[in-house]
Amino acid sequence: AQSVTQLGSHVSVSEGALVLLRCNYSSSVPPYLFWYVQYPNQGLQLLLKYTSAATLVKGINGFEAEFKKSETSFHLTKPSAHMSDAAEYFCAVSDFSGWAAGNKLTFGGGTRVLVKP
Amino acid sequence: NAGVTQTPKFQVLKTGQSMTLQCAQDMNHNSMYWYRQDPGMGLRLIYYSASEGTTDKGEVPNGYNVSRLNKREFSLRLESAAPSQTSVYFCASSGHRGRLDEQYFGPGTRLTVT
Image 1 (cartoon, each protein chain N blue to C red):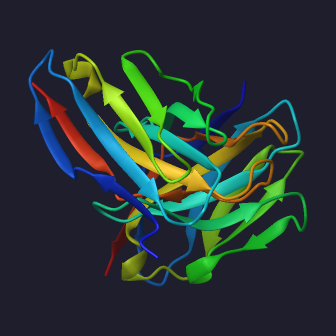
Image 2 (image 1 turned 60 degrees about the horizontal axis):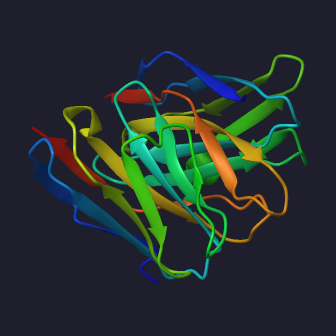
């Protein structure tokens, strides 16, 4: 069974500082990994995804993530935090079971980011 | 395109009551999913439908049933609501069966069972 662990349920950063959100996964097959963002009272929106191409993946809003197989990690970073980055962030791994099945996701517990002025 | 829509947005039920959560997508997606979101637990898959005419259990199916009414619509039914089913419910869809398309999420239904 796949699993995702996000270290830190809450992260506080100052505006302009580095944002680093940690994600570690376990998977019995080559993983496909996603980061989603959830703004208050909204659904989830895709930030970026890794599907075995480049290990450094760039997403929307200046975010990027690096896939490290040896560390089973897919940490999310943004060089300079903006007030609009305050949200909850979810890492997810795909249970891609082939042509006959859907693309089920297993999510981490989420990390809520607070940005201080 | 409206994307993924869900009704209702909010609902309060008494223990033992039943209700159906509705979900529709207008992106011609094959696969649809129901998740529940609880604090600190992320999203957990309740049921999914890989394609029209098929449904399968996810991680937490107990107490729920689903119907894939057609390609656009996927409903979630609570037959006898319990306080443990108080949660935020999200419907999602993804494009092509077998491809690693991302999932698109609806705005959610906030359900309280008293």
